[in-house]
Length: 55
Image 1: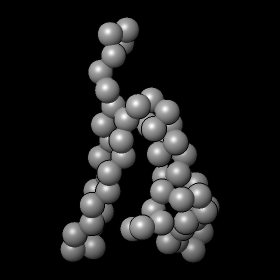
Image 2: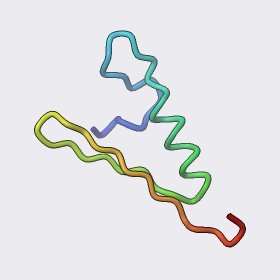
Image 3: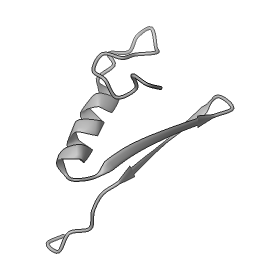
Image 4: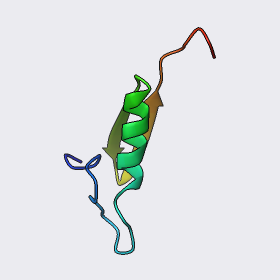
């Protein structure tokens, strides 16, 4: 979990390890946050973005 949003951090044999890193970069640039929590072998990701006036 500590390296989850780093580039090329992959827990799967055929993965590239860029998906969560790219997601984190985009959400961060938009002023949002990405959170992850894991319990009993299941992992949940939450993304929160600020509401803007021009949406």
